[in-house]
Length: 308
Image (cartoon, rainbow, N blue to C red; front, side):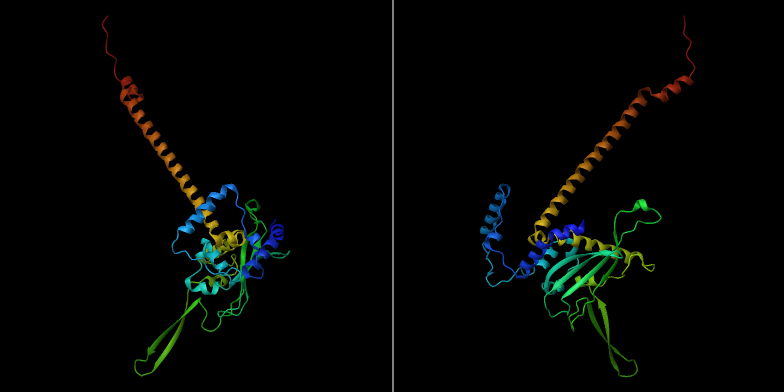
């Protein structure tokens, strides 16, 4: 199914890539969005909002080629990838020109590859950075009924050849040490790992089935797999919506609906509690008026003699 879908959308993906990079420029007619009647009000409100902004100054796009920072903005608008990106990553990711998904459908190993394409830059030598994910498509032998489709179990990343002094994933700490007796001074350089988007290309372990894998590392790999599935299934197919921010608004609406559902659940719980309290009050009232406990007590007492 994935293979058929990618084959169908491939022409649109390549066209999008060409527009982003500036290889082709869409005509004014192609750039015009035909709003339906339901969206006319939204269009009018948007225009009014722009006109009311006193400091609004349209950018001169006459010399602009393609869509600069497209993928950086798209990833910043998607929370799973935005959490990975740090401020020092922005200048590098401005060179990111495309993200493509390739399916690996070989008989031996199935999976997919995420390819990140970069324009020539001052940070590293590679034009393409790749992340390879491999599936386990066999049901578990101990309980085949638990099989829930192919799952990612192994990952591999292409290495990054950083140019001197440009590696944003590490920080060099220098410490000067003096000898106690002699007046010798030596400098010790220590490498400290830093948070960066490009740590994504340095997974802690390659396989989730490694015997030496501890629980914390397994969780890191699971999070890595979750981000990969998000890129493949959501971010890349809907990149334009994330770039414009429309996909973010849609996610917020879903969150609001979830909050409303939670409120309904809370009110239901309150009704249940009220009904329980009412039940106990009625039970206590019946006992005071002469429930089963009073009957048992009365049966133990001797009846009074009645005079005829």
